[in-house]
Length: 269
Image (cartoon, rainbow, N blue to C red; front, side, top):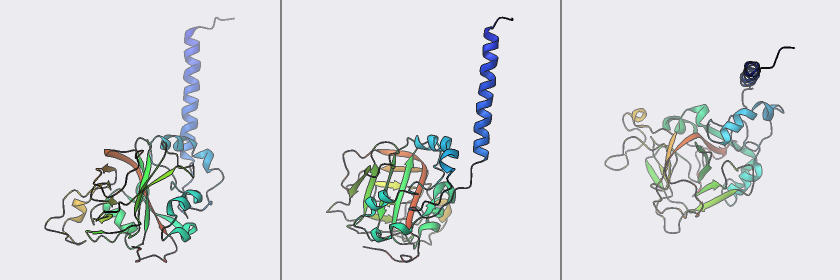
């Protein structure tokens, strides 16, 4: 019998590594097209969990966008977040109307999907795996104006990507003396307070007051929702566990609105 040498061992390890890579490649090629249905729905294929195991692992640490809307099948979490809001009675109708990895990262893409759809819940995932967002009771209309509200709030999940735990959501309410809950920049993404939680900040400031949605070169000035910042302008009462400071990068941004259309062109103050 021939002796088992280190070269034999290296050859076997090489073969095993190739086999693993081939299997992973096949798994990615066979991924089904995600279904973007009701956020509270359970219509995903039974094989989804197994086939998405590799992607979900990467998404959980913020390396790739989650393949499906992050709140799909998480009805209890939605109920917790939307409690005492205008949408509390419409949890079953909530729909992911905007998903950056699907619809585009430009603020123009964002507004094309969310404008005039009523109140909206923002869910964002940072590159470091943190899940957080905010609730805009007024909705978006590209007005280049700001709105007052005592119902707006920010929120985050305790622990990286811990949204599978229904008790993980922590709300940060609007401050009692805040003058501006939400800014509705036509060339920007979600903006809570003047700088408390901003996604896709416009590239150019609105000069000479608010100019409305028809400002020139809107696509050129549009911000990218791949980046966000938290500046603590004082509009919101931040919990001591708030997980981001300064600028951060994003791998996904989603907005959930009432999918039955009953809140279209309607907002709640």
